[in-house]
Length: 489
Image 1 (cartoon, rainbow, N blue to C red):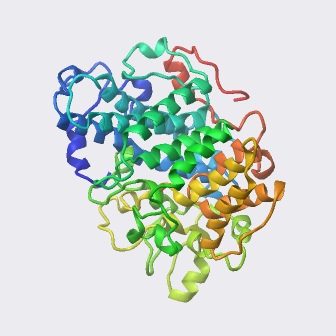
Image 2: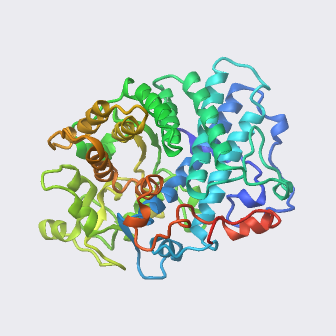
């Protein structure tokens, strides 16, 4: 969050069990902690707020989830410097990933670290009373739901532990909880959050009731509970959000935390970072990975040329769709127009993810490629409208009129003609516009999986296997080999 998190998070060190640790080594095992015990903490509102910032902090590590959500899809190629550059990305791109994949293990570890930090707060939620306590608890419960939603999205059944952190040794007894039960907890957390959070926050980046209802609707959508999803989205649509008419501005620095952003993950360039602990960066690491290789020129910064849009997604845009030039940077055309120079990386397509490229003008704190301040627009109002369109179409009985209305609001903002489609053609158009509106934002792979279209759209995708990513092998070992691996891995 763009608050005094850099100082506060150094004061809040949480002891995490080995299989969900976020440290960069295992040297912490059997080391006596010098940090204050949680039993002696949570004696004032300030201490709850400090712990809450620690729970927010792992949101910044979700940059990796966003990259994988695109690279695993039909939108982009892994890219990078060579076929061996971040081999985990290369394998995911080709659907050849296995239970031994560092990037998937990072997702597992970092999301469970976020769960653990939220649970530290919730374990002591009744210890000290103060005005506004329910709002603090609501934020913690939203965060736990957010991290668990990412985990079930990636891995399916996952260990569920609530209102207490998992402690060392307990991993031998904990089981993988059925996904439906994890979703039940996600729903309960988000319902509480929606009922106890304000519609707007004085402090930028704090969770609102709109964010809680939007994520709740998304959780229902992923479970094909379309009536419940539509009702949750309706609460967001009737709230304080709007479609920003200047589409290009949405992804520029001046567009951060605008009226079209329902939930936005905050990044800053005020603190340095290194490759030894990517999850420690306060900057958006994905932006550096998306960046133009060895770039010199105006507007943009340099980077590592991963996550390269393919010709198919470029061609999916109609000629007059204003979203195309905001989402896709044609690097050859840009270089010809501006005199910019760059080097072609591995799997060069000629295109870059313009939404999340580094912009010039930040502090360039070292390592500059890891400390870009570009916020991630995790839930946009346009995203909510398109999910609501789908939910209204699929609920029983369907409301195609409302589905068209919400779809057309997004299309008209893109300067496209509204459609009057009905039936399956309407649903297909909702899917098409969802891809074009959200390309580069990490949703595509999971949209294809949940709608049953992944096998027909993603090269190498095997039905009955690739709907889920494998549980990291080392986590199964650390749990005493008591868990079954996901099917066909």
